[in-house]
Image 1 (cartoon, rainbow, N blue to C red):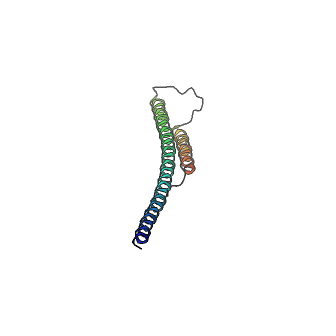
Image 2 (cartoon, helix red, strand yellow; image 1 turned 60 degrees about the vertical axis):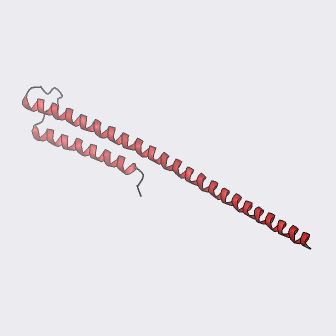
Image 3 (cartoon, rainbow, N blue to C red; image 1 turned 135 degrees about the horizontal axis):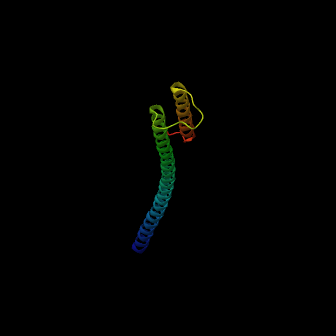
Length: 124
């Protein structure tokens, strides 16, 4: 009878070890799935971050170019107004015409910048 009790106890101990092993395997699988999901999320955010960085750089370059062109146009207008430079463009016109043309150009730039902003994905 003692031999049966001992054998039974050994079987129970082995069964407990098997159950713990199964639980450890299940836990390890869940940890692996979680790690894979976190990796995919990180990669997705990294891609999004790169895209936003590229878009931001493109917008910055466009704004820099716009500022440079506006500065050049302003310098040219100032030279024309002071008479330091003669207007050979044939557009002629007085100061008001030039100001209206400059405002139209500024409006075109603003509309283009707004179009670029509207094409960006909406942030949440």
